[in-house]
Image 1: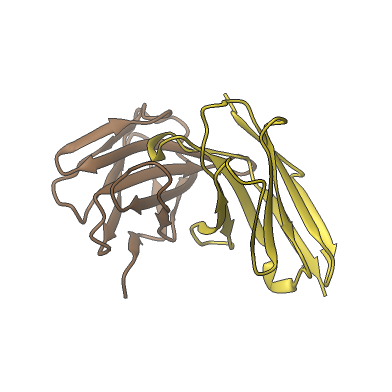
Image 2 (image 1 turned 90 degrees about the horizontal axis):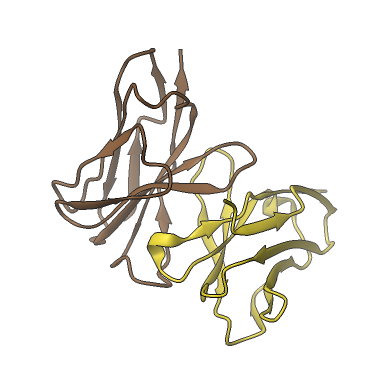
Amino acid sequence: DGGITQSPKYLFRKEGQNVTLSCEQNLNHDAMYWYRQDPGQGLRLIYYSQIVNDFQKGDIAEGYSVSREKKESFPLTVTSAQKNPTAFYLCASSLRGAANEKLFFGSGTQLSVL
Amino acid sequence: QQQVKQSPQSLIVQKGGISIINCAYENTAFDYFPWYQQFPGKGPALLIAIRPDVSEKKEGRFTISFNKSAKQFSLHIMDSQPGDSATYFCAASYNNNDMRFGAGTRLTVKP
């Protein structure tokens, strides 16, 4: 079954703690993305990567970090610097990251603050 | 800043009716306009998309109407079914790394 797997489905963060959200894809896609979804708002881009060992900031990168050591994996770390981390986080991929490509999304991770 | 404005925020339609969701954009450089469908607890999935060189695209019960001069596009769902109940997002981009999403419309189709 090809697709994008995000884990965990639910995650709780204590104040001052860093947490890491996992995203794995077996679609052999070059490009991967992280979006944040808040109620009543559209998806906002956090980070994207078009190639291994390279990534770019999106609109709301502050308080987040990523790595792209393998083509299949694009983990997102929510650091303690992100003061309002409660949101639904979506990982996506596309074939090359070129214009007009279909985005494939995972099922998301709901992050909440304890 | 929001470059794609979507309305209404929520919509209730009777089974068999027509659901209409509207979007307006600001950046004339946008040249790709997809619609995504999202069920609760799931990621969005591409429903249908249009390029600005056509005014309408139809796939089954779903139709996108596009008005380039007005910088508006809309999704029409004909013969709406309870299984269509979901949140719908319009989006616009000129490259995938700069895709702008609307705020979403929660559609409820009543039996």
